[in-house]
Amino acid sequence: MKVSLLDNALWAASFAGTFILFVVLLLYRRWQQFPVFTTLIGYYVVENIIGFLVIRYDPHLYATVYWITFAFDFLLQVALIIEVARVVLRPTGTWVRDARASFLISGIVGAFIAAGLTFAVHPSVPKTIDAWGIRAYLFTSLIFCELFLVTMFSAQKLGLVWKNHVMRLGQGLTAWALISAMVDVAHSYYGTAHLQDFKTLEHVRTLAYIGAVIYWIAAFWLPEPERRELPEEMQKYLVALHAKVQYDSTQVSSAQNLR
Image 1 (cartoon, one colour):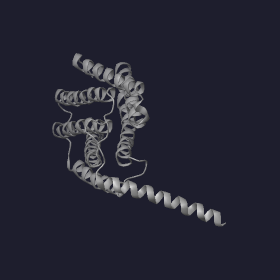
Image 2 (cartoon, helix red, strand yellow):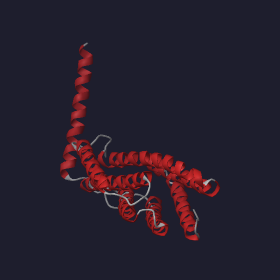
Image 3 (cartoon, one colour):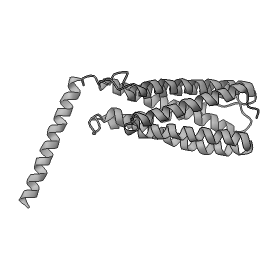
Image 4 (cartoon, one colour):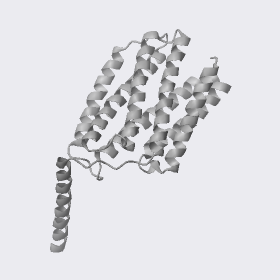
């Protein structure tokens, strides 16, 4: 497959942005709050290097490498959803009441909706493996959009300001996932027969990723603003939780003294 000057330019911009973001996450110790996200970005740095070398020196191996890296990418992105939910829905180290159950229910419902939409799509491609590739990308994009939107709405209710690091992370991921989903829908319609159309759509996906990376670099470079005061209902819940923990500790101590 011939690699154009535009392909090289987008790859270089994507790699440079990803590397700079990784350095920012390490330099400003953002990895302490977002270890999975930092791991994912570091993985993208390595993935870019491997993909570049393979496509230059052994193009026939690229398909195998692509599916292996896609599997690791998918697992890390699932872990990232859990990490964002943990940061948002465990503001004191304990899950907010009913938050975990609501998140799981939303995740299951979202997975069924994403699966239904994915199987409703019939990509116009000659190979079955290519069809499943398009469906896999579409499925992950849809479910990530749904779960991140649920998490972001929860964050808003918990008083997180829009410039908070976890909110900025979610905003960039959601925008990138939405554009990726639209690209995958277009792929399902056009297929891979017209190589130029396929490459143009992939350029759109790459530009969306570069935009998200630039947004994250600026967001994680700047200090995190103070969290807004929690709503009165949440404050009452946290006070009650603290009182219950103290009461349980007293009961345990009393039981041990009676032995």
